[in-house]
Image (cartoon, rainbow over all chains, first blue to last red; front, side, top):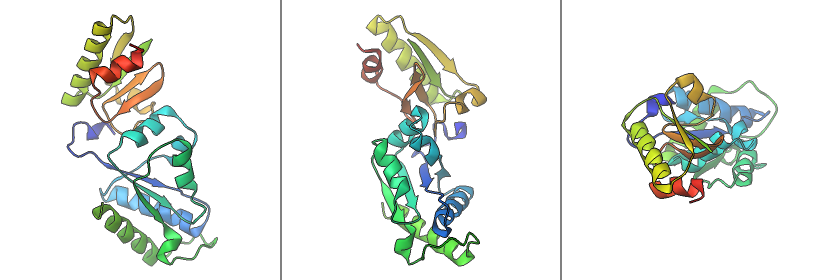
Length: 125
Length: 77
């Protein structure tokens, strides 16, 4: 966090639904790996859902953001809407052709597919 | 009213502290201003980046330098 101080262009905020299904956990895994690769920085969606002011204001003020929902329940999107935070880049993983199930053993090819889709969406902003 | 300026000490953080203090003085407010550089203390506020301004515990601005007009608005001036 503090290391970003005065860095031009800021950072990409990554918000994942991190839900209890394969696609929810794919959103989480992709967010973690993209953070580790320096593409952006994962941030706490739960803090936004809890309407804690530091989290909410951070999401309002960040210049670039990607919100990742696993499925069309769109819990991450709803959390942002409830906090009146404008949506920027948005992605639903079942829209990528990944079926939702309860198998939490993630397939490496699915993780890669999600990461590439997110990178593509960000570069298209 | 208590205002915290959060930032480890870079140029933008110093600028934010300066803007906040000048706005408070110009508004004739009795708000106190605290410049917080301790990383652990900053992290407690759940912010994504610095500088940030916290007014009576509520985050008002994150990752950018506010204008004096912004600050005066938070002061109710």
